[in-house]
Image (cartoon, rainbow, N blue to C red; front, side, top):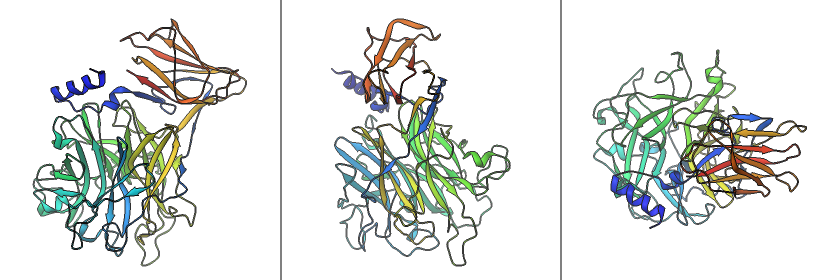
Length: 509
């Protein structure tokens, strides 16, 4: 029996919920200053993604369809086998009131693709809409009708090893519920509104037919929370999202704009009332705060096993108040920046303010503000990232879905800083049976030298090798197998004439 099969069988027998791909490989990214903390003469260069020339790759539907008003990737893209699967939010009318969806409902829509570029919207036949079921709306059922009506951000988590088939797909989304529908009650801090944005969790066997978990929101009994993320990291499930004062504040208690918070659950049933302050943009935490700088809607996140990587909305208020008759958010601009976390709770920008995906120039389809999703796939030698446009003027201009790409895991690279000096770094300790590098710029006269060190930074005899070729997954051939079960570290040496750029280290346990 193959190791992968044995692990899967053991997981099911023990009731574990493992994502095998996460168990098989860890990644030390070039921008991970925790795992690559010790550096000599190196600099980090982040790389902006390249937008696809045919953007937007998924457009809104024709009149009468559930996504005629807009198609927005406040959602998720994953790849299963040879099929790309997308869950996104539709809007079935083009006229909206104060920026809200008609009937407080943005349908959970579904699309498929074989290449991530050309998408189809299958007739699922599940939900009655405009007199028929020939549409791509996913079915959500629950005891309380208002809990089944998605209004905002939709996050899908696929756990194929969950021993309960109906829990292999998990979702978290925002619904706007009347207070009287919320069993357990809900805080009404400082507001007189009739509805409140709440966190709803649901599960599914196929990702198309969903059942709401329980009869009340995950945050019932607490405060509002605009959930935007769902993932499992270590022993807990986490939901991340945004809040703004008066429901959130800076650590010293002072007023904050939109910041990212996190809640957790050990079982996807019971969620913490206590929350973690997960991230705020640097300008939000200085004194006085940078005017108008905020973090928008948490982050679109990608679990790489030992590290979380993602995109966050770099919100900037308009320079002046909106003209009379315009939306409150008229003039707001949003770009997408890079985030990472080593513990799944606390996030940071490797280079604060760097735009991994900037909004387009004036006149482009994505020129106003852009939105992140949980939409990352490594395909061949590319990392594919999907994102959306948001018309903050509420005219619904070009609110569709685009694609951007990078070199595989090529968010950034390490290279020599001073031309007249060599360079090296030492990683944190790890255990592995195989090590690979994602690197380019190596030349025949300037190979990289890699050494295995023990936990005291001492070279281990027989564990030195040279890397003479470039590649996104270049395996290192040491003279003998790596020491099983021992904590080791990696030292990578750049000679004085090296033009190498190192993007990531892959560790196979």
